[in-house]
Image (cartoon, rainbow, N blue to C red; front, side, top):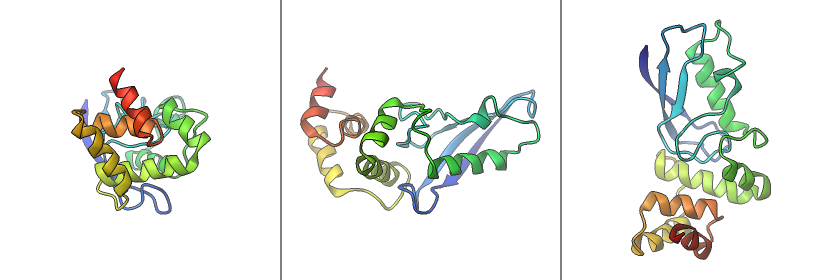
Length: 164
């Protein structure tokens, strides 16, 4: 088994533009006959990537794997997934629902997460202010951001979610 770290850049014309995402890559003993295990280390808001664990829902990492595929192919496939989310086959149902019900809220949230977690250019000052309000109430910064993201940046709903 081999353990690697990968880095992909957010594709252009997406909420992830200008951001850099670190990946955890585990190459199993029987590679290339089975796919490597890849997950995001950098937090990301995407329907096919768990916002909690970084686990990726991508067919080439599962049943569509072929021994002829390379790590480069996988990294390019993950980058392509960032550009073309598949909300009907989600890893994170909350993010997928937001993507399908309010693309503007999804783009704002994804851009904000890329800004704060992946050094992207998209930090939203209004989102930062809302997170700060929850932090001042004693909540953890990431949990505050996650709750606000899940509740489309509605402070009252996010506060209620955190209190439960």
